[in-house]
Length: 186
Image (tube, rainbow, N blue to C red; front, side, top):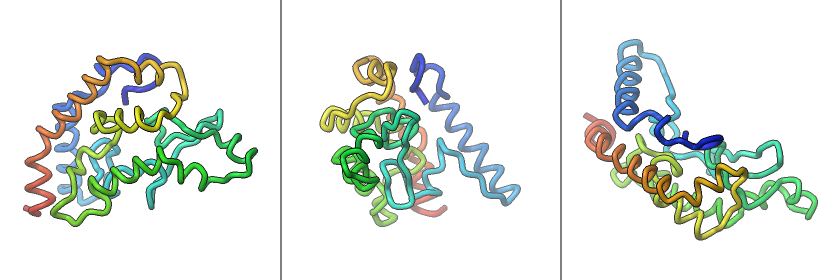
């Protein structure tokens, strides 16, 4: 994931490499008849993105107490230490407008949709595969970046363009697979 120290997009697998990993994973699953969950490509296993405290999902609290929707999405509107100090609890975090906006997208993209209307669950990550949407959520709800690199990434127009293009390319490469193998079941 392009986060953390030197959030270099060029270090993540290319969309073509990611497709290769998906194909290799499918081959192993079919030939060996074993279950493998690949975090990058198997949103089909979890019915999509599981961040922001979605039902059956989770959210991340770092060592400083910052509550982020996902370990790979370093933006927070709450600090758990402050939440408890002010009489709140985990529901305070879960009910934040920031987390609710992410869950709303999850529901509309796939989670609460009938099979034929589900978005492509091979590209399910809100921050990596749908950065255009995620960036809009960040601008609207203004969570604070939990570190300097997250702040720099948020303000880096080139990062936004590259990560948005990354998600669009993944869609191009996997749309046919999603429609044929998952929606049509062939």
